[in-house]
Picture: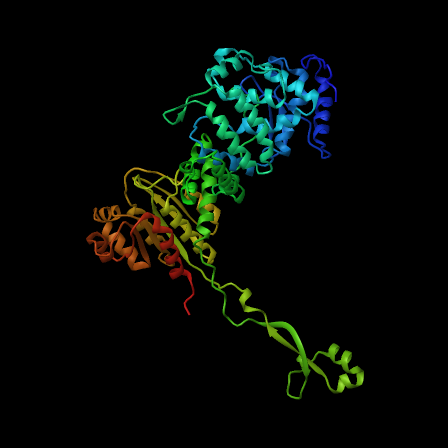
Length: 558
């Protein structure tokens, strides 16, 4: 395809459909995608694709300001590249984001857009027209020598394009490229090597990213282990949507492809062994990265972590016991001879006549035997109610920022109860409290609530407990408190001990006590008040202890 001179976009917006069609044709797309939308201001991305709806948006204001209206074909084709290949899906994008946070010391600056854009643009540059348009887009950006300090990684990225596209030196980087080579000796040779090696690492996208990041991160200045506040100059930065909560939840554990990529990176020396955490530390680092990745979107953060906790809880859950009651004999089985004394309704006249003919069938009728329905398919009818009190004081980690074993234990108990046909309600407390006080059988609903965090001091809401005892006289729930020694201090205040005794007399009142030993006086005092005490030596043991308790409470005893 030869480069074509196109009229300025500002003067002839009618050329948009033609540019859109040529972009679709480049990728050989036979599927229908809605034509691009037009909106955005100077502070918005040049163009954008929503990977959920697959809608493409072009920013007319920015296109006109940069005078690149005759580059629409390349702009559209670039966004379609995100849709088709890099990252293609929000699930892949989420994994790349958390892999970057896990392995790279850079904070406040992401290499992901540079990475995916590089792969897309190197594909587009195989077409002379698109390469010329991409060159024009990048040359519309400032490239004075002093601009290198704003974003050196971006100018190294342009240096890589100069090598990959075999452009004249400094065709894209101009004075900034000359300054970059002074500040970072060997930059052009490194750019040439990256341009040659990166395509050879396909098809594992994670291998490609780790290699790319290991090189480009050298051009993102670090200061005391944290990135300086760079001004991201990449004109197509932020040009696709963020993953959903479920995508991030899926990405909190490494995939087999990621593990293979890390293994190869270690073998090639792209990563040092001390940069790679073990499996348990990997999950902690990824979970702790989410608050930064989802800064400004607390609802999505809470939902992602709630999904993650539910999946972790699955590992501890027990299956509901099967119903062992005799099932009804309703399944037709074999035929046998009907004898005098058998019930006439047992005769299968159709089968009798079919097998013996009219005469014999009437004289020697057959009866149909029935067998019981498979009783293992029936689930035990079990009804219970569980009331959870979860301590989320300042000594406990925020479950959205780090794995909180006590929160996970509460999830295990709640989900176990629900799956045994029970109902749950919960309260989290610190110096104050928040309630989800409607009985529910929704795992998702209770799981989201348990991600709430307060922090601060510890003040168990004995007044709420007393009100609950009065409310549930007819059908007392099992009450479980997940806490530590502060519960003892709260219990000895005012009339709180009497509230505890009242609740323990009404029904099961169980305390899971962090850092406790049976011989400790404060543990004995709680037991003397009527509560059942379960000592949990360390926070990490809470989920297993909760799973064991759930089996004791819900499994059917033979």
